[in-house]
Image 1 (cartoon, rainbow, N blue to C red):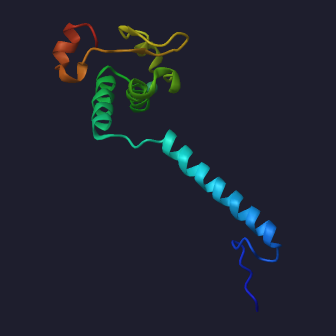
Image 2 (cartoon, helix red, strand yellow; image 1 turned 180 degrees about the horizontal axis):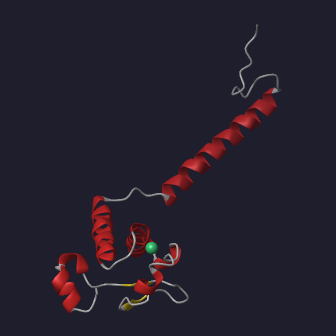
Image 3 (cartoon, protein in one colour; image 1 turned 90 degrees about the horizontal axis):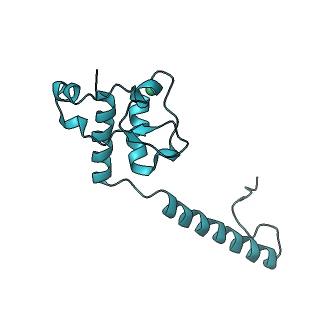
Length: 128
Ligand SMILES: [Zn+2]
């Protein structure tokens, strides 16, 4: 039984069609690789460390795991690109000292709470 090669551009078509298909395939592949390069730069070690540190800050401020991750991500890529805080975290977020982007439910905390002890953070009025 003959095996049909589906990926071969020249199967049963004229030379002109085969040439055009090959060209189109090449174009699509190059487009895919360039857009992937532009949009998803790998995270650097410094970015990863900053993310972990900031997530810790928001956990300490009382946010849930998901919202703390969102906030840390917000510092990195922009608070208007992340999901809104959940129902439980919304009132906590509203107490944060620094304004978020206009029209967003997010506020942020630029104080480095992750380096403070609980007592210091409480004294600064950042946690209850
Ligand atoms: Zn939450």
